Length: 216
Image: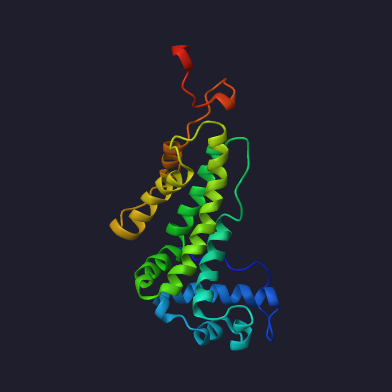
């Protein structure tokens, strides 16, 4: 399993790190500690020591452990899908977003991080609320693509949020419950369950519509 990609740039030089570099090191250290010991293994002291920064450097950016954990998870997902792609085909864009998400959860330590955090949520309402907000933000990337499919009459479910659930549910079920592998082609299969492919040679605005009066 690969680690999340390090922050771009040169290795940190001795001395006080630059502001952006320090933030990247703090978030990276938080993910590493979450992967190693779950939320219980994360403290401001531990993160500061792992990142090579001072406690005040951490506190200038985040109020405490809850905010730090949420920021680290948010940053990891944002690296995978910084924004919703916008090509001429929302189905292709949907496959891109979902494939990136699957790769993040299965090809880096973030999948292990998420699994550990889920078990922690019943004991930490504040952390649960913070991560719910992160999830809401990341689902919006999928919603943007699905709204375009809906505008083209290609969205199979009647509701965009239901479509998001149909896309992510099987991935998280395998990741968190059954432990079954998530095959590389699953993203495409799921995307095609919720978005009709454009009909060859047809106007995209008519794709997925049922012909009226039985006329083909």
